[in-house]
Image (cartoon, rainbow, N blue to C red; front, side, top):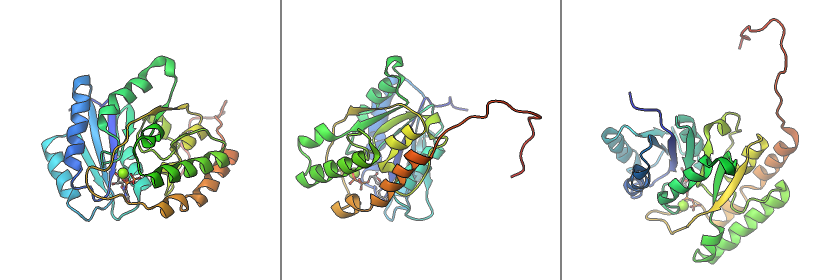
Length: 254
Ligand code: UDP
Ligand code: MG
């Protein structure tokens, strides 16, 4: 039986056949020098291309590569969530499968979350500085507007809430609320549960192959509903613990 992983690297995948082998190769190259036990968990969101066949081959060659396939295309949040639930590491890193944000940054994220003085439960990537140096103008502006609206309604200061590149302690996800679109609000959802979230800048590149699954409109407007739901959660959800008990334990009937 192999050692329990310190780190699980989770990637959602929808029609990423050209990116999977470079992704896995880049994650291995980034993590091998650290000499830690790790696993790669890829959640295939019912891809129509050859992604699942490639994942089957990769998994047969290396037990550290694990994969789940959803029964239909459910969207990025569901794929990330399925991957997180399958992950067994003490720390869980998420990143997109298209290499827009490179796995070579993983050691820096691991270092940031393990550093005692940082006190972070979750470290999020921010593409703002990198985008200013070369992303399409329309993406820069739409991202700035989306983050501005999100921050003003949720009273947050997150510069890049939807960035898929993050690392967090596994306890962060125990009570996380899953909903379609949640991947855009993860920093705020973690904070609702009382966790400390910090940001570090990351580099940002064009996709290696394949196409983005979003346009300007579905990115900006689809999230409005979710935004008010998240605001409601911030106001109405709270945490408590039972302090004392009489005649316990007895397992409640479900
Ligand atoms: N993705 C997914 N299901 C979907 C759409 C996207 O699992 O329905 C994955 C996709 O394969 C990629 C990540 O989510 O790994 C981000 O998608 P994309 O690169 O299209 O988003 P963008 O970078 O344009 O924001
Ligand atoms: Mg992408």
